[in-house]
View 1 (cartoon, rainbow, N blue to C red):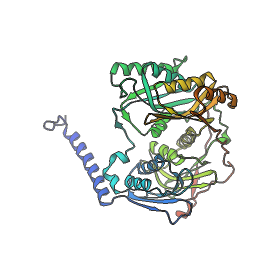
View 2 (view 1 turned 45 degrees about the vertical axis):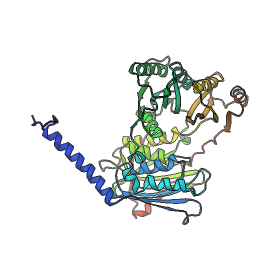
View 3 (view 1 turned 90 degrees about the horizontal axis):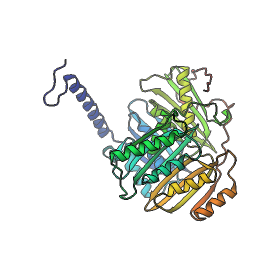
View 4 (view 1 turned 180 degrees about the vertical axis):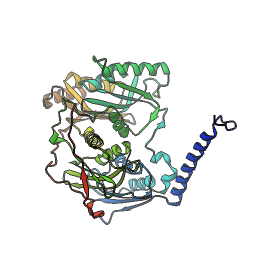
Length: 459
């Protein structure tokens, strides 16, 4: 037995471990104070984009934090150059607004400087991608098998339980569904704290997720924590193994993102190249997945050519090793494919904007279900008493959505309340025959790459 420390009831070994952790934490803070992050915003050197340069002491996860801050304010990253070998992190991002214009708004520029610059060292709430407590609402996380009308059923149960949905995001992919919902009590408009009521909410929602198949996997988590919603959805679907292809997979192999993983033994890197159709937040989705899989990005080059995106990452595992086997390579490939596909919006985009009220989400999704529409993705937000909701819907039978069906729904909900944004363009896959293109390859002046053999297996 180890001797106990005075008062605290800790062993000497435990105290030494705690002391070591505190010393490491203080050392990291000291390094950041001595070498504070530096942010340079340049609107002159590039004709078509604002250039943001970030230099900082390096640590695991910092790339994700920077990308998250930029994408959370809806900036489009058109190019990026990333280098973090050693103890220093250096990034260059070319960004535009949603309209493809430079960022000239001083409010936004000031926010970027504060969020990424020296002030962020002492403002953890800005940089946090973790968990925070909230008494404003109760967070509900749902994962389970997808089916037509699922969102309508979940919304109806919440309405029955006198819960008002103030914010929600729902993703579906590969027959799986995940949702993060923020709800309040219908009467008090605050978080629900009664343990018995929370237990009942959890139990009823879990039954809804299982549906008629009581043996199917379903999970419901209720808490007062606040996380980054999109990162949490990636983590939930990853944990639900949505990256595993099934016999009912509707995506043709040629329609999938082109993800390639090779090993560069001279430098002990694994090189990940991705070629796919470009879209907003694509960089966040891939960096988020690599980070949550415990890979470190040492170098990267991101480029957008017309409608297509090219991403190249030089990675190692946290333990310093590259990808070690065919099985690991296949897992990295499948997980990145899934991360890209989850946010691909399949179906007709509908936007609803109206005065918020209790039961609104339940009523709208019930009307969708009664008209044989299934929701493939949804974003529900409430601001200053206004509900601003976006739905991507498809015909439950798999056919294109009938215009008459949409007209009928708009007649019920109101022509000005529900607007049709049109079908997203079908993704044209980047040619699979094109050779692997190492955008960053000239940096090391070597071509000694070794490619694993890979036989795809589908279960």
